[in-house]
Length: 111
Image 1 (cartoon, rainbow, N blue to C red):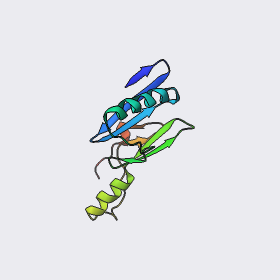
Image 2: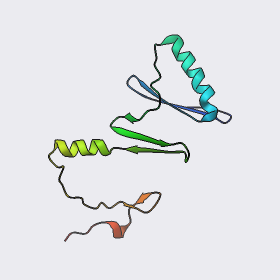
Image 3: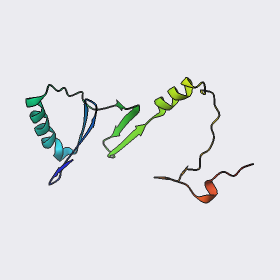
Image 4: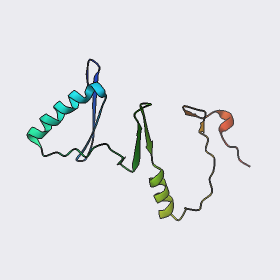
């Protein structure tokens, strides 16, 4: 992670992949990083990430939100274990707006 005044750059890695996140001011830092890496490695910019580690990545630049979803992975696991037609069951975590919380009254009781 690097911060320089208003510029922000974050690098995440997985095996031989780099995920470079930056704000508008951080584009200069990203370009510097790419120049440095290109001097020592053969690299390729694959553009904006849409999928990684069994997660779908969805960005909304206007609102500044990033959404990660494992829906496809969950569907594949259910299919693999012949549970595609299983019934939905509530969980103790209940979505109350911006965050999921669990209160005592949300915990299922036997019976």
